[in-house]
Length: 118
Image 1: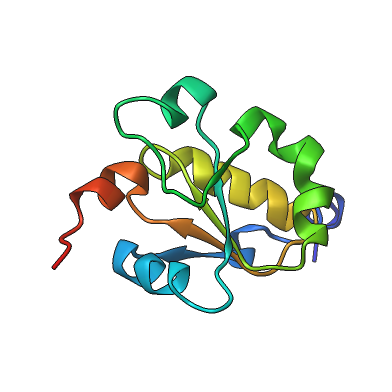
Image 2: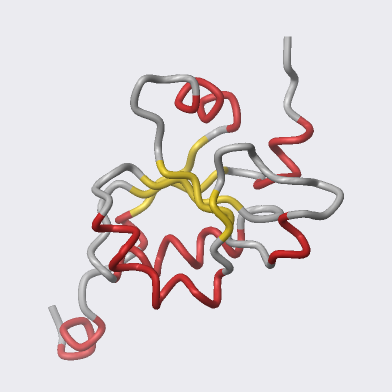
């Protein structure tokens, strides 16, 4: 490990994974659902795409200051945004803060709303 790697700390890229919309449906119905965080701005959260019922709205800009509180809940985290870019950025921040059980909803709310529900 080089000096720059030591200064940057552990790699966040390996500390979060991706979750498909169908898999999230099953997790939300489980006895121990994950903590679902929507990192969009409040106007998006209440806008036309809406939000997933159990999601908490914590905009991306607030994630760093709320990381300790979120990680203290000791629950798996699933992050969602419009597509998945901001939620991936939030996942990286949470991983750098010490989070280990973090997933990003692939496709975000666009993917969630376009999934097939039988």
